[in-house]
Image 1 (spheres, rainbow, N blue to C red):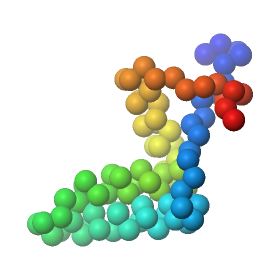
Image 2 (image 1 turned 180 degrees about the vertical axis):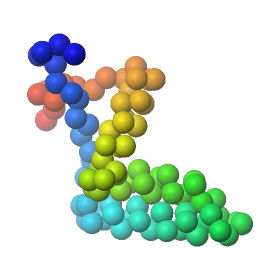
Image 3 (image 1 turned 135 degrees about the vertical axis):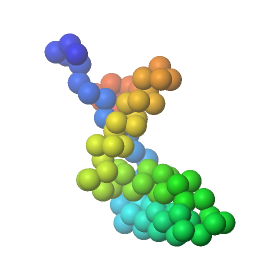
Image 4 (image 1 turned 135 degrees about the horizontal axis):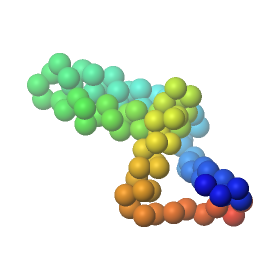
Length: 88
């Protein structure tokens, strides 16, 4: 990277009830997904992955994985966001 470039930091939209809402909603999906791994009618991994994705911006342990997924998405789609200094 050049000296004048900084790493792009994604803008995360607001979630109802802030980070608490994120953790509750994501945690509920993860719990139902874990139950789905045992029960034959619920698709477990289909609920676990979005649950972790919802919680990732609010949970420091999951944040690096969230940023890695965003970087991979941008690499494969060729999408580039605004420079952090231009973000409003």
